[in-house]
Length: 259
Image 1 (cartoon, one colour):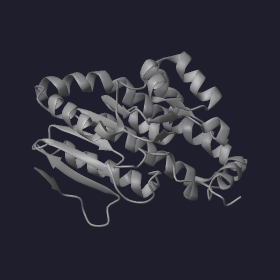
Image 2 (cartoon, helix red, strand yellow):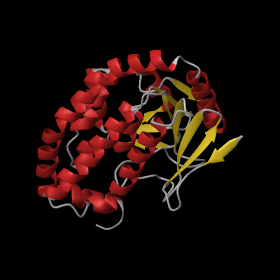
Image 3 (tube, one colour):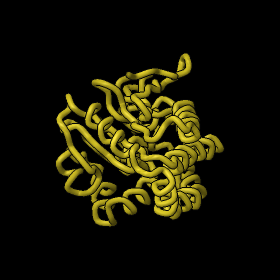
């Protein structure tokens, strides 16, 4: 039986099925863009679940008929001027990635709709990525006028340099079948079965020996986490320069109809 322990007003709903916790991106528009407050809240939830002995695996899910996450919140970032606000934003992004990678339990990303930019990067921190056959993945930073330090680094670690370069240089969408072929996804399932399939896999993973899994994951993710931390200052400088030019704000304002 599923129970819910999400705090009031949270943009996320936390439910439990046995020893599996599901974090559903419940608030805001169906595109699930990630503002700074949402990133901080997701980091907090993951840290809390990681310290909960009753939880043995975690699913991140965009919600029924909702995208996994369409990236950063354009309404937020178009106000950037290339100053200290960019540094604060990068700190929140890096903290979220480190929180995801630092979860000692199996972390499953259940992807429907769009996983774009920051949303795809969140998915790339998961131990297992399941997507619906309707999922579409993209890393559009260059067409949007922004740097792609984190995205490039994470893609190269997960799928290799060639796929990373193709995604960054084209900014094109990858459909689910292509994403599975290229290693971005581990499994593709019919859209109607996505949530159940993700929970079933998470339940299977929850049965693994926690001590053995924890030590193995910590070892395998150590360089990944260190790379994210080391990349922060470079990412801040790159994004400061990009936003100081004003071009990303112009492009994003047009995308959301404020241009």
